[in-house]
Length: 284
Length: 262
Image (cartoon, rainbow over all chains, first blue to last red; front, side, top):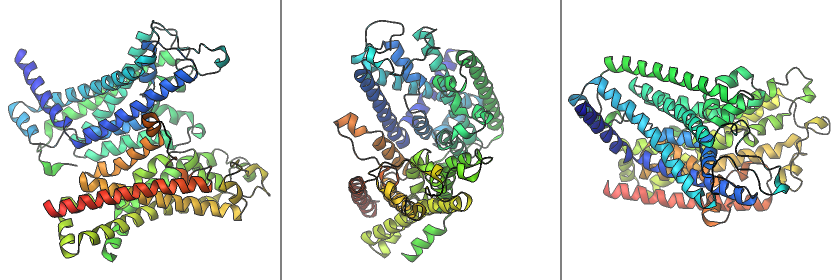
C-alpha cells in the first residue's frame, strides 16, 4: 500500500514539476492572478463606496460563486494553462516503463484533480488576502449596506443563499466550480489521448465564448439549459433556475459525476489500445 | 514581399480568422433578427443595429484580439520551428525580414477582421431595412449627443459609421497581430502567440492600470465602439501607437537575437 502511494506520489510530482515550468503555465498563471487582483480590488471598491460590511465567509462565497468575477476569461486562460496534458515529454515514457498504462492514467487523473484544487486554493487565498483588511469581524451573512440611503445597492449574497450558513454555501459554490473545471480538464485529457489535442481546446473555448457572444435573451430556453457555462458557478445556476436554485445543485453535481465517469471510461478504453510515444516532436 | 503576401492571403488560417470573427458577429444579429421575424419589417431592428449589435452587446470585442494573430502572425512560430527564418534573414536582412513580416501580418489581420465586419454589414443591409429614422422612427438608435456616431447616423443610412467601425477594427487587428509577432519570436508557441494579445486586451479593458497605479487608460475598443469623439479617437490612436512601437521594437530585438545566436 505504502509502495503504491509512493509510486503515485512520485508520478504526480513528476507531472507537476513538468507542468509548473512550462511557459504556458507561468504566463497564464500571471494573467489569471492579475484578473483575480482586479476582481478583488473592484470588490473592495464596491464595499468602500457603498458602505458594505462583509465577513470572511461571505467574501469567499462572493468569489467562489462568481468564479472570481470573470468565468469566461479565467476558465479560458486556465484551459490554456493545462492544454498540454499529458505533457509530450520523455518523462512520460519513463513513467510508463516503470509502471503500467492504468497506473499512468491514474496519475494523469490525479494530476487533473490536484491542479484544479490548487488553482481554486490559490485564487481563493490570493483574493481573500487582498480583501482581508476591509472585512468585518464576525460570522454569518452581513453584506447589506449599513447606509439606509443605499438600500438599492444589489447584494452579493442572494436571499436563497442566506437560508444556509456561509460554510455550507462555500462548500456548494466550491463543489460546482470544481466540477466544472475538473470536467473541462477531463475533456482536454480525453481529446489529447485520442490524438486530437486541439479538439478539446477548441470545443471548450467555443463553449466558453458562446456564453458571451450569443444573445441569450432571444434564444429558446432549452438551448440555454444545455450550455455547460450555465452550470459552471452557483450564481449561474441561480440565474437559470429561479425559485429552484438550491434543489438543482445536487442534480447538477450528479450530472457532472456521470459525465466524468463516462469520460474516464473513454480514457481507459483509449489508453488500453493506444500507441504511447511522447517526444517533443508530438507537441501540439 | 509578394511571396509573403500570397502566403498570408492563401493560408487556411487567414480564412479561419475571418470566419470566426464573422460567426461571432452573428451571435447577436441572428437571434435578434429571427426572434422578431413574425413582426412587420419596420418593427424589427435596422441593418445598422444588427451590424453593430455584435460589437456593442456581443462578444466580438473579446474575440477580436484573439482572431487577429490567427490570420498570419502565428506563421512566425512556424518560421522559427522549421528553421525558415534564418534563411530569409541570410538572403535579405533583419530589417527587410521584419518589414515584410510586419506588413503582411498587419494587412492579413486588418483585411480578415475588417473584411469580416464589412461582409457582415453588407449581408444585414440586404436582409434588414437600412437605417433611416426619418422613415422608420422605431429604428432610431440612441447615440450619445456629442459623439461622432450621432451626426454620422443621419448620413447615407449610417455609411460613415460602417466605414469608421471597419477601419477601427482593421487598424486594431493589425496592431494586435504585431503584438503577436513580438510574442511569437520570444515564445515560439502558437497558442501563446494567439492568446497573449487577448490577455493584454483583457487586462487593459479591465482597468488594471487603475487598480495598480490609480489612472485609467482609454478603452481598447474605443476605435470601433460607441461614444466616439475626436478627443477619444486621438487618445486611442496614441495608445495603440505606443503598443505598436513597443511591439515592433520587441519584435526587432527578438529577430535580431534569434538570427545572431540561434
